[in-house]
Image (cartoon, rainbow, N blue to C red; front, side, top):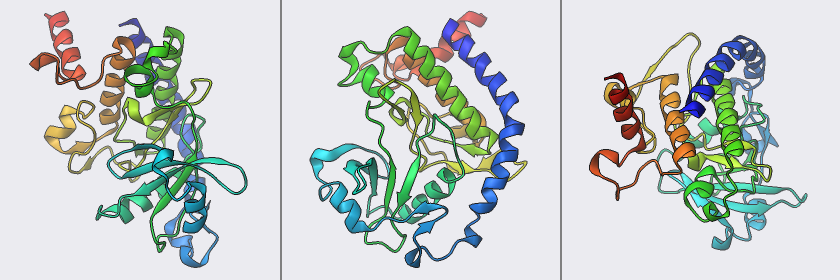
Length: 289
């Protein structure tokens, strides 16, 4: 409870302090990221300010997308470890061919990530042309897995997530989300699987396939709910209105995971305890009574 209160206070104060400063900086960056100012990527060496990689170079980097190089997969594609010709280690997302919205998601992620510069957000190194044989996105490689790995999966037994580290993960994630919201971006899929950790356990928030960029001075967007069960804001699910509060709800579930080491969804728990968010809401109701 103390952790939740402290991080919540930090999140609110950070958000208020940074919003004006960041927004002014991003407006100038957005001008250079305007789609209308970019040439056809098929005949250029960069797109939205990021380098264009050839399919063959990324095929070589991932050893022909060897399954042994798989880092994980999600709703939009599989991510592979790769090493570029210049020696850089990278993570290459290969979008699913059967996904009919893949071009839209590909463009969305490029447009959003090229607007952002924050130490706790994963960096986009480049992409293939949208006319390429396959749609591929190239990110910096973060070697220490996800928060979910350290809480629930193969890395959990190491006991590496001390309370000090958990507190730092919470604070750095809050800072990254506050930065996004100050730039009018809603992540829309905040969860422990999308919070990467480097070798020093510093946070890198990743996966912007569902993210939305809000027009200036717009507080919400009406859109069909998308996200991950257990993290999805009930109000968004019910009213179809996406706001920054949706990310805050998901972040709250992440906080409970960090405190309890319990997964967000567990079908083996009692019916009313399957979702961590529901457990928290019930406890809050009891405290109010």
